[in-house]
Image (cartoon, rainbow, N blue to C red; front, top):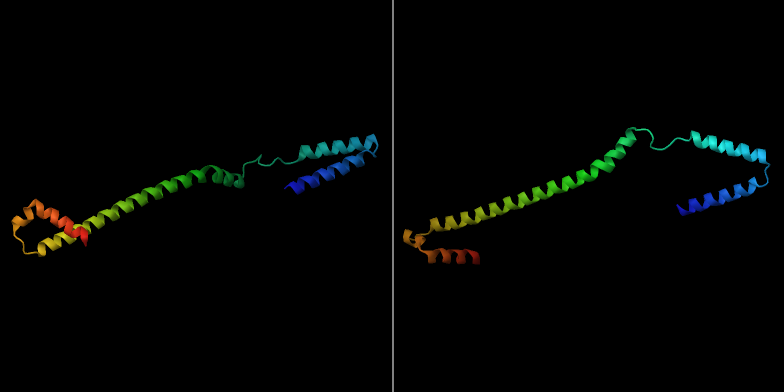
Length: 126
């Protein structure tokens, strides 16, 4: 971009040097033509068009949509992890229940608080 700007300055400088050799009438006509050209130059972005709507969507809506998508993704991830942990806990409880039901222990052994501690130690080691 700087090389374009430098080129434009060089061209302007050469054109300004050339105007020193022109008579006053020609310089005035060139100045009037330049002013006329600038007055008729189309201003960028003055009219709303489909491309303008695209810029509005890209600049205003998409950044907010990205944040919303990120928050929804985070919420879905947290819910998924929570559900997965619940399934893991249910599977662990199912394993413990199956082992207890398959055993030939009397009912009083299951009511003993020390037995519950032994069960949690026994199954945490596996």
